[in-house]
Length: 316
Image (cartoon, rainbow, N blue to C red; front, side):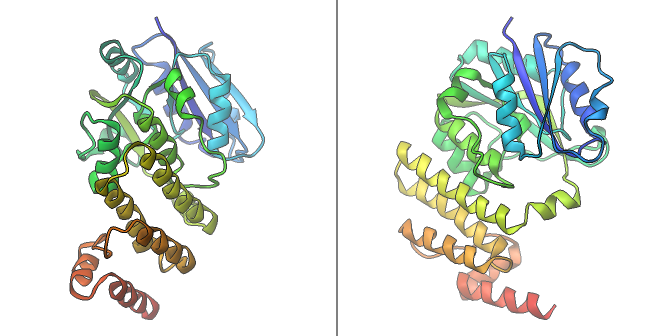
């Protein structure tokens, strides 16, 4: 039986990490190892790991670092033929590994496997699952174009991949500091290096809605600058595979969404995103974002709509 390594970066998640670990150790698939990499916690997270007596749980402690660095560290310590990355506050359905490993037997090791995910705050019984367009089988480029064009996304713990695929795609990009989309950049490369993306209809990931302090950190200038850098990485990687109008339109959607979300907070980064958009040569900016903003774009144009929302925000 092939071994599956589940890698969990742990930073200040003392209230949640035991539930995440338990959902791994209680998997119906027996041959697993759970590697937890604690990095710089100040809430007692390390202490809560000491009560386990299961030899499949392996814990490491490193100096304060990003989740990306912790994931790479855990990967290098892992011994599994298949790899899953799980956030310390999320939870797996107990048959997830077994179901996804069964799909590898059917489709081979060059595919990347995802599953459905739902949001919750306190208990997984309250999780809300909202089907998305990406909850299907796709070719690599089709999956990315669908996702970037507003068709949804996957959380980190949804995916299961072979070690062979990760070695081909490369590890997590440690230069993307505090990036709220570091998993997007990593899995973009993973998807493009796969034969296809397969959707596991049986398994579930329970995604805990982030706490307020984590959200605010992800809006720092460092984080948002890093986010824009990841969008450039998308562009570099996918155009190697397909340089088409549909791909460029999907890339343009990323830049427009970035401008819509962050023009008020970081106008210089928004201006940079505009340059990247126009460099794609795909025409005028189109409507994205909220329904009200889209109406304004259709009436006045994208730039004018941004200006009007900025004035409104200033006076409010």
